[in-house]
Image (cartoon, rainbow, N blue to C red):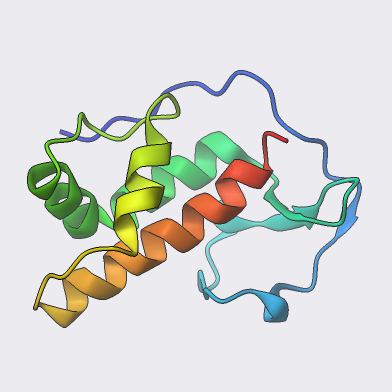
Length: 115
């Protein structure tokens, strides 16, 4: 089972961010609303909502990574390992592979949200 935990503190959104500059497309889900922090980096406007949506959207990828690398269920406290392993997977199933890559892309932005 995958869980989302309450986030501690996050960067403030101080402006808009041009999402066309991102290497990942989250579609139209408002859970993935992105703004810019004071360094101009993309951050999620609501990190808890974004993480919960990612856990749902990338469920198969999270399950694969947890199984393959013996990881605890993803949470705010352990997301770094999922970020690291997501792009390194050698799984032959293209859908799972893409989800793992997207997980890393998600956590690139998620991590910015706490700097």
